[in-house]
Length: 148
Image (cartoon, rainbow, N blue to C red; front, side, top):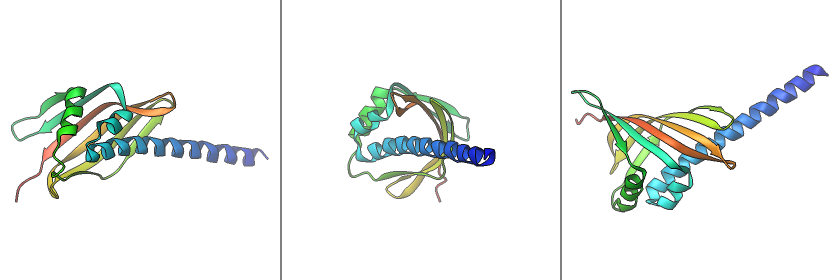
């Protein structure tokens, strides 16, 4: 009887973590869907009001840290021409979460007009607020693609 109870409990915990992982992935996917649609309302729906954005640009002459203001990011997203085709292909999700916080690592490739522009890794920090996951911090690395 104890074994059955323990196995049932373990499967229940596993199912709960799987649901949370799915909700976290959905939050990040909504962020990107909003970017592709140039829909700042959609993007903001999954971002905390104090979200921070940073990029580490990897160059031969040395790495640079760039910080972006939320308002500037939203404005830039809204102003991207509908004629520009861009896609950030997330190659994997590595999710770690503990109750109300989560960290997600997503290696990616970024394409502009179907050509590889750059690649790197995103690191998302999220918090659960009022039952919903919100992105509170994004940092990414950006390695410019070698032109052939």
